[in-house]
Structures are given as structure tokens and as C-alpha cells.
Length: 72
Image 1 (tube, rainbow, N blue to C red):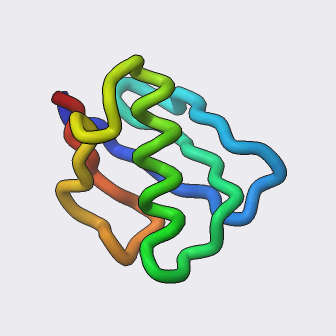
Image 2 (image 1 turned 45 degrees about the vertical axis):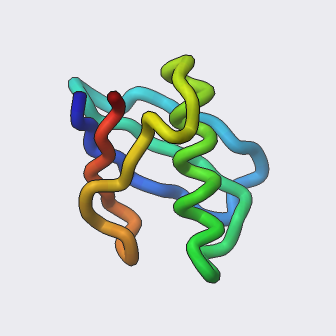
Image 3 (image 1 turned 90 degrees about the vertical axis):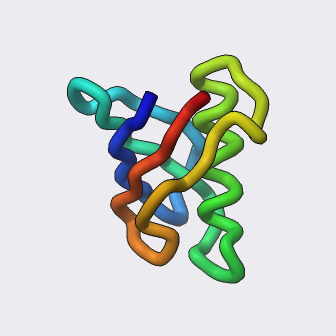
């Protein structure tokens, strides 16, 4: 399944909210330095969908706040 994700950086809490059909808002505490925000987003989405982190892959948008993520 592929989902569209918008990342909100430097949030007070880490969470995932559904914002539409196959689109999500992911709030991360991490700054966008050295891929730390991407790693946090993968961790939050894996918890949300109940899968391991290795089953969540960023397809596009590595350096953007809007990403396409595949969940196996």
C-alpha cells in the first residue's frame, strides 16, 4: 500500500493522523538533519500500522516534507 505523508517537524509530540484517503500527517520531534526526521517518520508510521520498521519504505520525497511511503 502506498500512502501520501506530510511531515510536521519539531512538534511537541510524535503522532500520526489520517488527513484523507491514503494521506496522513505525521508529527515528529526531530529536526531535518542527517535524515533524523525521516527515521522518526518511519518509526511512527510502523507503530501506527502495526508493522516492523523494515516494512515501511520512503519511495519519494527524501528531502521534502511531502513524501510517498510504501507499507508492505
